[in-house]
Image (cartoon, rainbow over all chains, first blue to last red; front, side, top):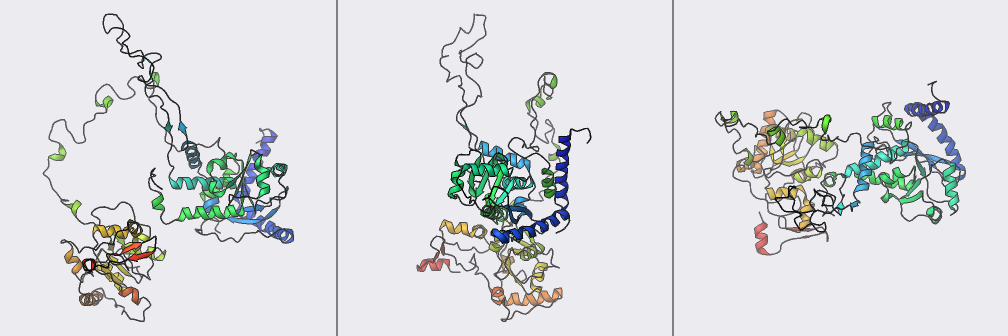
Length: 298
Length: 295
């Protein structure tokens, strides 16, 4: 590693350290217990207890351990850890299927796309009704119309015709896997933050921008809540900031999660997401929804 | 938790050291690559199809055709082993082992009689219904480990299967359902939404009537006294003690429940209309309808 520039060396070392700390569960677990006791002390003092370490996770196979994340304060500029939360491994610890995510993004771009590219066929090009020259005797190739595809300015064969719909449906469980994969990646790359609720002390956009800058949340942030009616302060504060967006859980999608650098979920959003996705992953009548999509279906 | 780290966990921990996944760096590496028709020195000219003939025109001879000779597959005389096979009734197998697994994993509730509707409700069977499909054949695979006390109704059962069920104190009946009844059993809710009266179950067709009237097969049309006799006879043959059915048994009501030969679903008689919207059952009142639907 000596041949590398010092800044690159430090970068690689940092990455390697990250990797090692994740790969060694024993050290991780010990660290977690220490900090959680510290957090418990904090939470007892001045903030409500949101340490949800003993959440009951349904549909757990027993072979997979829950993922964990910090619950952070949202009403202060500085990050204050309020507690640890267990997250379901089928939702937040799923195999990161980049290919499935790509399928989802492609589908999200395509299904609503209508191409208006258009060319005219020889019948639609103006003129060309007359035979340009006699069939025989001119010493030239025989032609019947100057708008034939062989001619410059003639019609186009197999060109794009408007409007062309690119609508198609991705299989249901590919869409579900896209969501779980993306959520897992966001958590694994430290781009997912969990907050208790959306209450902030002021409706000043400066507060949100300072908060994002202080906490290194990057440029763009997607904030997700369970309900689509959100508190007044956060709504006004983020209204003018184009790169900070609010979204209810029912609107959460793969494209938006990847479009924004950081994903912020409220606790109620986490609950609702897990409940909805686990229902879909374990529903009994899954054969029905795996059937071929028909335009006439409800 | 165990020290085993799953593939997903490994992959996610590797992702920590990689750039952020975003719209600009995702791609589907597993997508099949389409080969393009090459030009010029890269495989142009005939594009690998050879010179003229069926290679270029894709008009290949049909398989087995020998350009006019008597083909090999037609030379030996015809031996129709499977003549009429496509017309015979089909009973796809479901083993006792699978039934036991379904009971152990709470797919099936043994406190109620198990019929086709209960099996379908487990969500494990589905797909297209074949027109020659007449229900399940309960096979004796896993008979040694079968220990559930059930009242089960299947469409076909061997002697070993019957012994395995009765040894545990259970009851087994073989019953015939016609195609229309099978559709009702497969998805009762779908049928109720049609708003039609429940049909009458047909009597078994000529080819299977002897099977379903035989007490040895526990046919649903057999004489109950004869069935009781055969239960004891089978226990003696296989050498187990037949558990006595007593009224003190909490399963007693379940075990003695049987369907009428004309009935399709437990608790619902033919001719009834189930209204799922108003949550009510409409029963026929006219004399001629009652006569028609009575068994």
